[in-house]
Length: 420
Image (cartoon, rainbow, N blue to C red; front, side, top):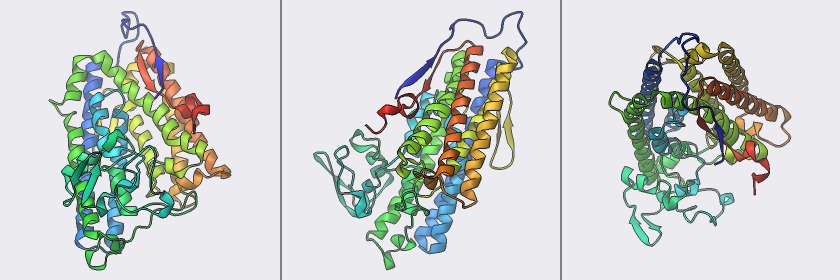
């Protein structure tokens, strides 16, 4: 993906002898940044464990009520995880693991049955319709793989099989597909409508109900395991925390890289503008459940929390302390004011998005629809405010005389290349 480079003189001091006094030291800022990460991932684990319990209940008693309870638990598991996404960029330990829990979009035919409209094959993906749930033996290249038992180890081996990022076998979105099934409504109203009987061996619909249940259990078990790996890198002896401690200046750059990259290339570009340009609901983040508005909203909440150095935990407590906001304000208070105003504007646009969807007026995939002037405008405002937020962060980078690389997106940087 194209990168946008922000450069400054690399060796200059953050604050000169005659300049304003810093409100916090770099070490204090980075300690709080790591403490917030550890807390966010801890909350994500708690919510994923609740999802695992709801899945166990669904598998034990596959009723409509238990399926809806599992879906509710999946939705509840998203907000605290989404707030962690600001840590993905700038922290290689997170980026290495993030694909295990939140990879998207996915070719769902890898996992289970799909509608005939999905097609029977793909020139770019030989495993497009592998259908792990329906097959006790899988042909992976020249090798035959025993899939008689659907285990965590089997699913791990299938993640991005064939080095294809669309082969998502695990994580939130694989679980989402299993709970909702395909959303076949296009840009019309409605989410996926998988029946609870898809998990009921005694009254099975669509075949292989025992294997579908086994897949769902293994995937939710893995989600908890992989979130634990992500939290571990932020613990006292974790690799991410140690790296930050070893080079404080680079650590401050990592904080701003996370906010800039998530704002610009990822959220404004790949997750919003691209789908809007194509009017394609397949490009929405939570495409099976119609939960994308919440995922976007909490991505923004995470960026605000990290910039301000304050995170409200699941239990109502708060992790707060020294922040990069204080560091920038001490250097140039006008730049901090610009970033704060940009974040408030983005949060406002995200709130309109969330309230429009939560209120039932239209879901995110409907907003993407060609000719939906109001829905398109809501998403365009999300994009515009996110881009402005990224530009404000650039000013913060310049104020601190740092050099970072921010993720780009063809949808923003080279629109003519989209769809080619």
